Length: 387
Image 1 (cartoon, rainbow, N blue to C red):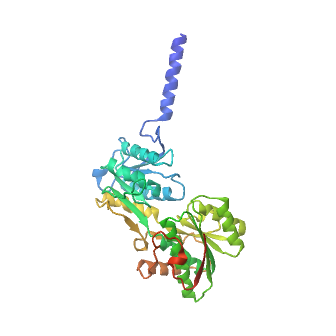
Image 2: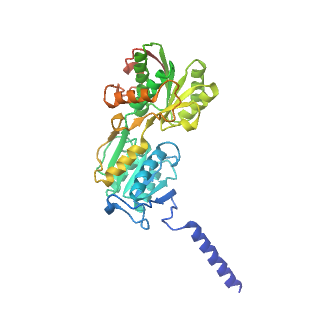
């Protein structure tokens, strides 16, 4: 009797455990955390030959970067673009979260997505450059959208884009230009740019910011624009970065463009402490702090949506890099949430049109250089470059 009772108890316990864990298609994973799985309810209106039955797998997958799909940054922007198309067309989709921020972990998680049925995998962020470089050969029948990067090997000695990879880059100097222009047109003359590592994207943001400020100054007929300018050398929020931003505010800087991941958090904290203003980067960061007056945005969801659509339209632009600019509405400022006092939507539409029509030529950084005083020839703006 005791043995029968024990066996019955074990059976009940096993049944409960299986019920709690679910099947392999319920969104759980033993080696990578997969936080959400969704099958769109609507019937597909597109190419049904590429539609996957949700009982056999998920056709589109996102492998997250270090954050989550609600990180208000690259992961969320990519997820929203992918999700929007999938739900419009009734295509099954899912995301996978790596256990570690390493190349091996990213590649392993990509493998889990492929095993789960993914035919198209979205990889947000430059940390996926090396994993996608390997995955493009390992999974030749799978297509990849690589956001904000281009595939290369570990030591950068080989850069190669196969037909199954769509790298997406953004013209960062354009949203930087819009942010600098708007800041000056809104009445600010003492600006700051606090960047992270001096990688090309960050340098372009900074150069565009300075050029936009100078362009506005010329329109307004003023010649007293000053920009404090520094690269912190990292993408982390640090006491040192906060202290530098605070000292700038203390000495009269009115608004600082925080450009470099969590560096923006340091600027935000300093702005709140000193009563200053800041400009966010990549996505709309207005919700983070009342000190954020606008954000120099990359339209992440738009770019991913367009990439997924191209795949299902059998027009996937693999093998070459797609650049998103003002011309294809790939960048911008979030005017609906911006806290300007003088700069209007009409002003924004006008200057955006100037960019879109190619009437402004922005200076590209010279090779291996990140000092704006060397590359930029500004007329109304003085840059105090802090090394």
